[in-house]
Image (cartoon, rainbow, N blue to C red; front, side, top):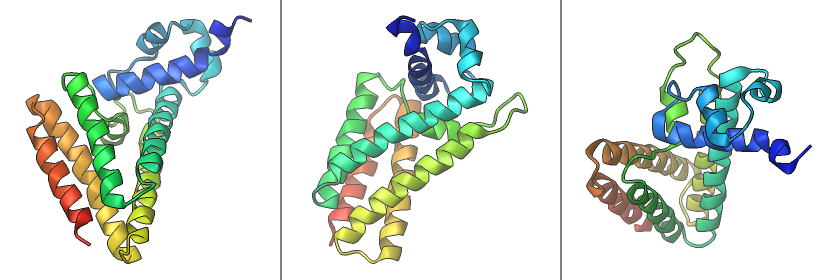
Length: 191
C-alpha cells in the first residue's frame, strides 16, 4: 500500500476540520471531504464506519488538540502574555483567510445534524472546550487566581474569543475581535 493511501484517514480528518472551520457542520459532506483530502471516497466508509458524524467528531477532536497544543505553548509564561500570543495567532488566522475561516469546534458545537444522526461532533466539541477551559484555568491559577475565579475567567475567555471570531467573520472586520482581545488581555493582566 502506498504512503498516499495509508495516510488517507488522517487527510480526511484534516480536510473535515478545514471544512468545519469554513462551511460548518451540515455543509461538510463526506464526499466533499474525501475529494479535498484526495482520498478514495469508497474507502472513507471503510475507515469511518460511523460515517459523516464519525469523521466530523474526529475532525473536531483534531482541531481541538491543535489549539490545545498552541495554548500549552503560549501559556508557558505569564497568563496574560500567553493569552496575548494566542489571540495574535487567532487574529492572523482571521485576516489571512479574509474572515472565511472560523473555529471548527464552535461549528461542531452549535449546529445540529440535519439528518437525525447522532451528535458525535457536538460531544467532541464539549470535550474540547473542557480541555481548553482546564488549560486556561491552570494557567490563571498559577498566576495567583483562586480556582473558582480562574475557572470563571477561563470560561469567559473561551466564550469571548469564539464570539469575537464569529462577529469578525460576520462583519468581515477585525474590529470586534481586537476590542474583545484588548479587554481579555487587560482583565488577565489585572493582577
